[in-house]
Amino acid sequence: MKPKGVFIAGTDTGIGKTHAACSLLHALRAANLRATGMKPVASGCEATPDGLRNADALALIAASDPRPEHYEDCNPFAFAEPVSPHIAAAETEQEVTLPPIEDAYDRIALMRGNAIVVEGVGGWLAPISDSLRANAIPRQLQLPVILVVGLKLGCLNHAQLTARAIHADGCELLGWIGNRIDPDMLRPKENLVTLNRALGVPCLGVIAHGVAPVSAAASLREAADAVGSLGP
Image: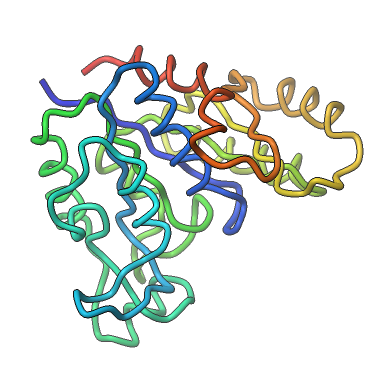
């Protein structure tokens, strides 16, 4: 039986997708599910003796159980320059394509875990090649989506636009996670109420500012339940 899978999208880059994905992995494990993280495309990687390594992908691996046997199964496309992946790939005469991503996902699926958490790159329409956007990944893997909303000024517009795009692309939006990236945001409660009304899907948790993923897991129990209730 294939594990349950979910795609973690974000309203933008730098809004805490990795933090939310790692927190969800810990929440799933706290619910006695074996869960593995994946970051199919990543730029801004560091050169190591073992090859290019991305900090976000390494964080996902560290939060996983079981962990991928090979780094490339978590992060099949890794680029050094911290720019949009389609630009970074072109600089090295590479191209992001979907078959290697699907192959890596299938290898993780064979590890007998219960869930796979796939983190996107940038926002929903971030280019990953000249012909592909980040939304191609959940569509190819047929994954439902959890949207991470970075709670800051402007998030109401960004969240609604992204939710509309997810629906327009025919993907299932399971719910959303709020991430308090701006501790000084004015009227956070009122913004959460507005987001709940506007997005029309459940809030699956709100992550407090500065809380480590293992501790933030407790606030994502509803997200873990939503993933756990998915069909195989």
